[in-house]
Length: 310
Image 1 (cartoon, rainbow, N blue to C red):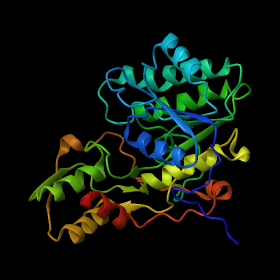
Image 2: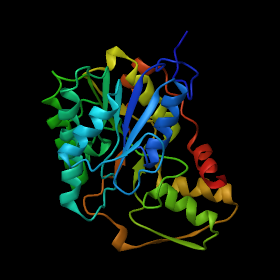
Image 3: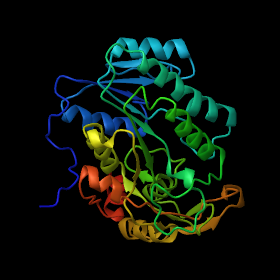
């Protein structure tokens, strides 16, 4: 029988264990925490100062080495999911991208490496953006990196830096392709489109219309992370997190027009067209499936409807 990736599984592999999720207050953090709690973990998280209001949430600036070390010593995690990062490709503060994504990650790894009891798994979220523009139709993990923007360079730099800790920590590297869901900020493409339809806007301004993206559902991504944490064979490896199918921007708009029941006027705003735009990103997820089970994502239109009706 073929094993398949289970969403929100009742499995209790985390019973009696502590999970540390950096960036817990972010979009992905909420879904990852839900998965981990259902698996029995006691979940602790970090958030930037001023946003740590929930139970088991610690306010910490990742670039503050001492503060990161103190947070890690406080939690003593059994597993770690490192999500905290500057994740918006067009973020205006380039220096902050590198400080948070590279130095912040190093501070975390340094703090974890000196714990008396090391975590059993440390999952680091990189990005499929590191592949850049490639002529490989279905991008596998061995495709050479060719980052086309500072965000992608920062994530690739983080990967290289993390290799220095592979002999000290059980690191799992993931490269998520685009994913979406309820709660994602309108800075991102699909939430922006969904929000326009929810408001019954007559028109929408977008950037490059000739892009194809592999869109996953955030719930599938979170389930994959949880399964990787519990898989000893995942340690020391890199995994694409993807659906294996690319959708054009036009196809996504057509789906939303069916869901909302009207047609929207689309205008290209040159200010939204990014330099060095990556034209197509489609991820080969066979390595991931070999560890977590067959990937059976919900249709993109179903995910968009969930976002529209939320």
